[in-house]
Every structure is written in C-alpha cells, then in structure tokens.
Length: 271
Image (cartoon, rainbow, N blue to C red; front, side, top):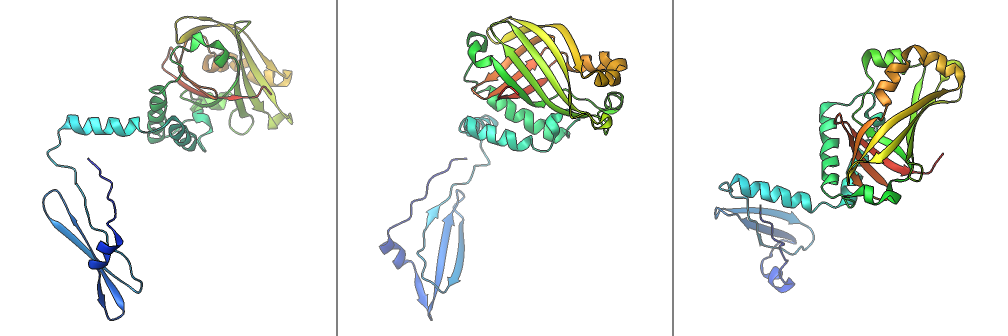
C-alpha cells in the first residue's frame, strides 16, 4: 500500500470551506478513494475548526502477491534493532525464560523477533571479535524445556526453584562455565548451584565447538537430591556440541545449538 503525507492547506483556504450556522460550525471532510468514490464526514462543534481535505489512496485489489511481499519486506526493514529488542523483552515477560514451556503463539512471536534480530546482526563473524563474546551472560530465553515427569523428578516444582542461568566465558583460557542457580526452600538453604565446565574452540567464523569437561553441585545436600537424576539434569543443560552465534552486540547474544535450540542471553556483571 502506497502512503502519502497529507499536508494541510493554508488557513485562508480552510476558512472558505467552513460554513457557519447559528453559532456553531459544520465541518465537512471528504476523501476520494482510488475507485473515485467520495466519502464525507461532518461534525458539529462549538469551536471553530479548520477543515483539511485530502486524498487517501487505498491498496489496489489488483496488487500482485510479489508486490505485497515486497511491501511487507520494506516494512520489516524499517524496524530498528532497538525496537525489535524492546518488543522481544516485552514478549519475554512472565514466561520464566521459557524453561517450563510457552504457548505455541508465544513461541512463534518470540522466534519471529529473534529472526528479525538475526537479519540485522552487527557482528556477522563473531569468532573474529572474541572480546565481545567474553564475560558473563545471563539466559533470558531458551527453547530447551523441563516439562512433565522431568520437572517432577528434578524437584523443580515446589521443593526446588530454578534461579539464574549464567554463562561465564573466559576467552584467554578457552573455557566456559555454565552455572544454574537453585533456591532450595525444602532444605532451608538460601541457594545452591550446578556448574558445568567446558572448553571451546573456534569452528567457523560464526560458531564454536563446545566440549564437556566436568560438573559439580553445591552444597552437598543439594547433590543428595539430584544424585539419582544427574544424567537427566546433565542431559538437559549440557552445552556440548556445535554452537552458532547468530546475533551479537554489546549487550545481547543469540545462539543456536546443533539440535536447533534457540538461546537468548544478555550481558551481565559477574556475580
């Protein structure tokens, strides 16, 4: 659809289009569409208002699918990165990072915004700018989920609450430490954590290969809870494998693992 800015006419011209009637004003506004049909609207007001007359062009029903697709693409290109990020943060409110599942509509909305960001990636070769990758990142969304019996086995309902999921990247050492924070109310503990230590090496201009090295749970009381289900816990959160960084700026990172899972992380201070 072609849009044109309608400039108001001069006040002199406006006055000529206003008819006075018994102390009030009748304002007539007419628009002519592409089919030469005139639509008129009138409004009576106690105050004098200027009348603006403009022509509104409607989208032609004869527009080809290609033209409509091109217009949609142009509209998407006009959206700035800051606008997309603002909409993304709004969409992520109240879903607990997606760990315990989201509706299909919400998932579609989030992944649509993620793809818009990826199309505007300011760092197309992130492994060549490792200074941007290093530091501490906090997970704010992932398509990895802990549902049903898995959530029950891990006690992640009323007994144990899942806190922040952090990623510490040490570029000099070629190491990454993934930290899952827990609030263990059932044991009267303030918190606990599950740490996964891994190494990484550059695989391409936009991806790294992550290799698992070790994992620990602290304190010991928390280990007693997860001992029987350590394989399950590690199977969900183990970062091993290929990881592609599809978007990277100073404060936001988007990545995809070899299984197609999406991860959105924001830069944070090391706790």
